[in-house]
Length: 320
Length: 320
Image (cartoon, rainbow over all chains, first blue to last red):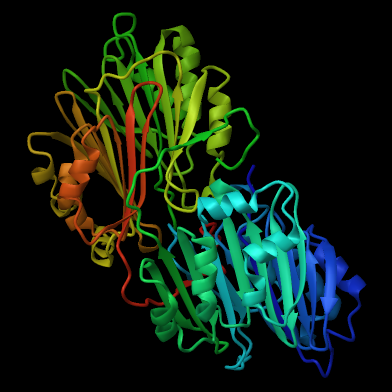
């Protein structure tokens, strides 16, 4: 069984004096927006600063001035962005970013990044960039090019882990595993002291958690199956500092770090990334919207030969 | 501009006493077979043991007892294999192998490996395996499972180079470059002393060469453009021994080695692969048809940050 864990992501800023996303927008609106990409809301939690929706495919976070939505699987997230633009009006948008990670099974997707940004370009003038090599992990970033200047304090971090250790994969695919067992395995109390958590265990496996505290958020999505394992962590907490703990738990064969406005990326990665990981890609770019973006992919060198993976010809599996 | 260099490959054995592929099959038949996957024959050369066709998308080699066909781009090679089976009859087949490298742009392909082997399975019982990780370079191998036992002397080598150096890419995309300039750049005289060569320079760039000497063959296909550069070398000559020269010319950021029946793979790679390359994947498997297959992917660690790649939103480019 395969599942496409790789996410698409959109971040949309509005002017909260004109439109406060926390108070002026109903949950029904968000449900309809989420529906547009064939996902649905599983649960919700909120505090004074932030509302977090756990989705059937990943997460939606809403603050007064912006929302961030991540969806995985075969969702077409750009349709949700189009819905927002059409309902709210393009004049109320302050800034839009649309991002897409390369997929494991891109042939099974309803659209490619080129299709998505062609659709967005009907509404928004923007620029598109690729971080990372075509023949390896990479992220596409489209951003509106409208004079918006990002606040240097608006920092975002992503840690995307591939091929987690067989121990982690076996643990996380154990039948009947409960949310609290997964929280313990992922050491969420240590990682997120004082955060409110909202999580969901998927059948037969898979796990999502949203965490919020004041304006801070962190979300983890786990696709644990051995042949396409993937764990994504996204947050406005510093994930480079937290990488040693996360890497120790998951022991991935490869991972990406992506940051927006972490100006000390190079120093921090030197300090926090364990030496046995080798950097395969290193990209740095300042976007015209003033975000400084860093992307790095790391791998574990292989020392020993493993067996090939036997495939099931009979199964209707487009993971081939 | 993008071009999908990644190849599909089929190898088909027959019993030459029943059907000699060199003498009993006309060139028109091969032309029709090649047409079935929307490729065409550009030129031909032959000697007593082997006939080599240069194709609009890669190559076809024919010996008395077998043929090997490689096609790249958006060809559907499995249709050519089906044509052969239908015309010749499944009872005359001794053994079939069908192989497919993961693509840069799999969403632009007319089929995936799963589709291809489902079609083959209508005619042939077989097994399918994956060599290499899902989130990195990998090769799928389907082989007929019919009691055939490969001759240990039947050795094949593939060296697949990704992200060749900017110098190599610039050289190989120079407008007006001639075949002889490319032969010189690739040092083909040194690599292939005494071989007959048949080559073609594509517009605006791209290069293919077939080389034969007696029963020996080597073929190189060059997709030189910077953002999806790829050079494949396939041969029954030992490409591990020749890797230092090839790597020195192309200086790829990453490459695969794949071998069939090279029993000294580990010793040879230790000896011949330059130390600055790090092994990212190592796979060893003995197939039920008696082929011992090795797969290795190597990367160059990155030391310095590069810029992101700016994409052209307006272009009708499915390389996104």
